[in-house]
Image 1 (tube, helix red, strand yellow):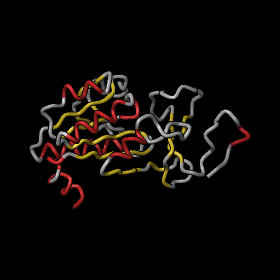
Image 2: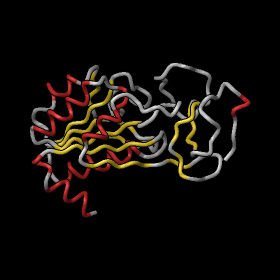
Image 3: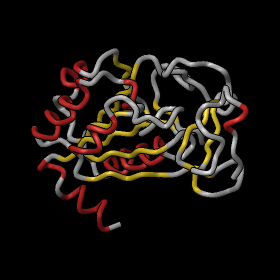
Image 4: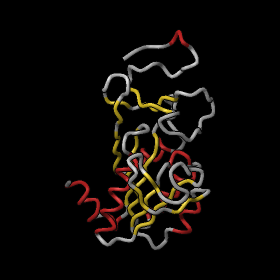
Length: 199
């Protein structure tokens, strides 16, 4: 892919790449793919994820397809700046769970000449832009939106529909808690049966 090769060649100038979409859309898979290619290119890579994300592994970044890459769990975005000084390429997974400082952190990393690759959910289960993701998408040189497949009709899905009754915004889960749906899904208020629509 010309764009990706161009990104590698120009990474010393610093840039931010954002991979976003719903759950089960392949965000982490794409993050891992780009980081492994950077490693093949003999670039020094560092990967970070929020410490709260222990679904598959306490330390590794793991995709739904069970591909993985070693990472460092961090409690706050600022911690990344302290640890990534020697890296040429910095990967950040599940960026929506970080505090708003992640935006400034990514800018500082890119301004210092690093290629920053960020993956995260662009919307929460209610369809509301999630945490710092809108700001990250705005400052990025490149934004890739990936899609899952709607489990109701097979169209492209872009919503992480919560199928358990829980109102808190952050609820770590998998296929027992979420399903990908397209725009013609049941509306987000799953507590109201009268609001249901079908694909």
